[in-house]
Amino acid sequence: MFLAQNLRFLRQKMEYSQAQAADKIGIPRTTLGDYERGHTEPDMALLIKIAKAYEVQIEALLTRKMDKLSWDEVSSKNVKILAMTIDQKEKGNIELVRTKAAAGYLDNFQDPEFVSELPRLHFPALQGFYRAFEIEGDSMLPMEPGSIVICKYVERLNEIKNDEPYIVVSQRDGVVYKRLQLNPAQQALMCISDNIQYPVFQLNYEDVREVWEYHAHLAFTEPKTSFENWNEDRMGDIQKKVTELHKHYIGKSEGN
Image (tube, rainbow, N blue to C red; front, side, top):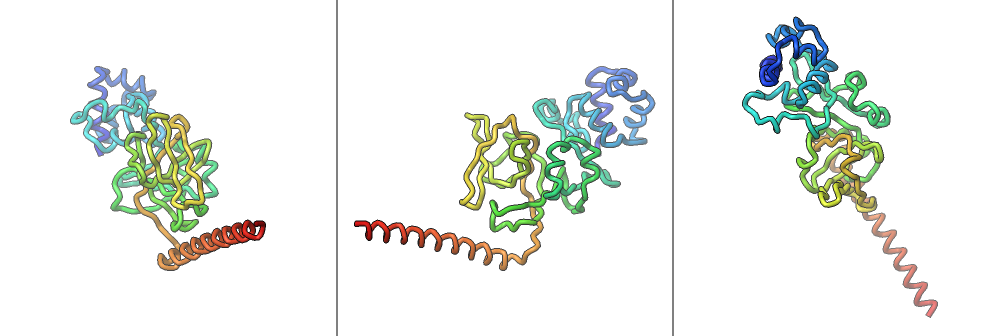
């Protein structure tokens, strides 16, 4: 945790006095002094205000020694601010977005108060900013509906790896779990389902609100059973198409 050290560094880099920096953030000078000495720490709402005031990333503010980094590495310009909460050990919580909360998440994903009210999962070994999402539908079979996908926050779209799975949050399509491909020429993401019955669709960069990279998942069906059910569904679809083709060609031959 480098918050106190980074607050001192940022103020000195901007050549602010404590009074000037406190005024820019909107807090008393004595409060900023306590933060810089590490005597107390800001809550999430104030942490966001500080990050906005200095135009830096929250993750860098908390977890990286800014005096050892270039400004491009810590600047928040063209980076969306992540609303998050921190546990008593100063680690980011893993909030769970259930299917029934997805609509509310679309409107409030940058609201620390809303995020703080989400249920939480605890995995002490994970470092960084993670969120968990409940999956619905069968577009990513054999991932079962109701599985929980644990994802790591993606700060910049150019960090996306082609053909890897991600959670994408957008006002147009909601919260979706897809494989992504970057399309820089059209400034868009190609969203691809593992289930070939679902068509590929395009999402413009400007419509993207958040992107989360798949890290792990929790399934509630025994893996062998899940795969067998998926395989049976696939075989059923294939048999249905074969039957339709057979009827089609039989009809054509009888017509001749």
